[in-house]
Image (cartoon, rainbow, N blue to C red; front, side, top):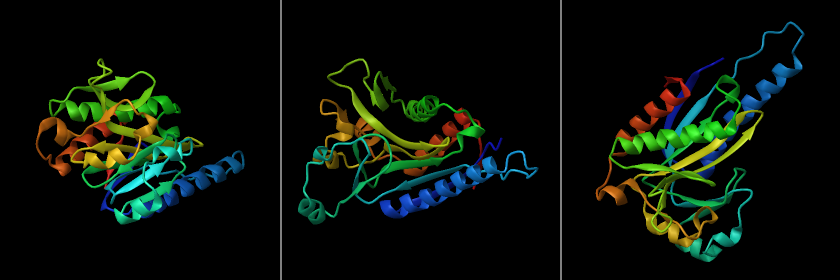
Length: 237
């Protein structure tokens, strides 16, 4: 089992370029696993797959998961263009969400055969890494039954608000897509969508909760440490 993860921070990058980047890694990993399976019992040493973790930020973009409802986008094409916002229909689970500057977007391309073959556990570990990171800043967060992501005021349905969204794709236990963690995000951009198809819950950010801009690089460092501890992986840069 390969418990090393190649980490790369791509900085501010267009959504399509980042999608192509992770798709290339994802497809290569699937191809290796397919080849290894075909060669089983033939005395051929199997090729080891890699694990990758990408952090980045995106220019303003709305993405719609394969099970999402396009009516949850409350802008037309002309409005998107005039506000310099892109829109992509993509192959992850979940509904519609927003990505933009000030938000840590994480794309783990993991071969879960190296960790555990349990997609629910995988999602809970990502959520837990964000929860632990927020705890380091004095923000109490948790989960709401039936809803993915990380939330604040989880016991008060009138005040609960999402600070991190999740949406993943998994094939042959290889993951792609991931999470969007609002640090210094411009929350006004969420008003143009029904985030994740949930119309009775607000969205928040660390900046909103703490009343000041947060040092992004520091949050990334803490988040990476928490992810590596939970998944028990070694970071390769």
